[in-house]
Image (cartoon, rainbow, N blue to C red; front, side):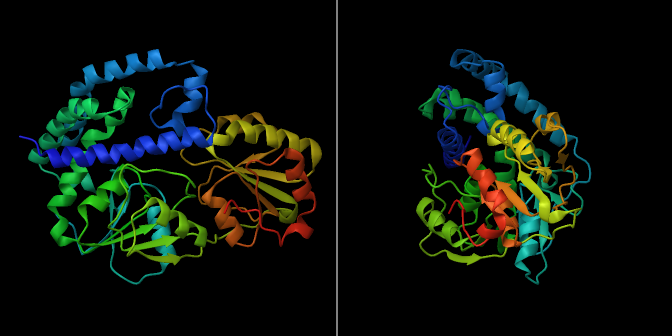
Length: 385
């Protein structure tokens, strides 16, 4: 029979995901959408493009509920076919990698210790232990049945029933939960780079008696009300003093120790760098970015580079002639001006000595004037915090 506490833990974890989606819709002023779409930052444009309303979305939710046993069964079969099985964690210090920033951020800490990277969602990542490979047939089947049980459990607890699509992550979440719990006694120190999503919530729930260390990887929303407030984090490495204030507001972290790290980058020289602009792409502002780029190309003769968000489609940027769309994730051009809507990369460029304009809520003419007068304005701060 199932453990109700485990199901409640999952419910609280996806509650945070729902709050993240809600906050995103609020910050981007998406008033035309009268439901909370799954992974809104990735799906809002598709919902607008295909005119998906709440009734069609409800039908999608219904199909998911009906087909969820088959969906989770496919997940189970995939794990049963895993090769390169491992049954142990080496060492007592680990990095739980569930996004591309964790390993990089850890390198910034310059800590001399033996560490093992355990990957949550990338089975083929070189040098990492894929956590699913720690499982046995029993673990895989157990996660399957918990995924099945959680569908009605979550549905009846949800205030807004169309948020049931959040359950699509249930199989992986339960499997990782059980595997980390099984190996918990061997682990002493855990690093991770999630803030408050389903994974961060899980780590906080499981490692109450361990040394739990968070590394900030992105800009934090000013107003965010979480269903589950993280409370067991020992240390948080932040990107700014302002971030410390926000963490204290959204978490229950009375005994947490904070450190501010230097997020500077290794920049690559480019031709005529002082007369070059880098636009840092963000999925939520891409349409506005396209308009800004067209405006700037008609006003100035700077070389323009675009650094798309690595996890999102960059095809829209290629419609603009005469700009360089950067493909290499590790290439950071040394430019005269960086334009950041609300990106961590903006903080990193600023820390590297590059004049950075935080252009959210700015008129295009004001952005142009700041670029044109950048030598006089280098001492000015226009950061979002």
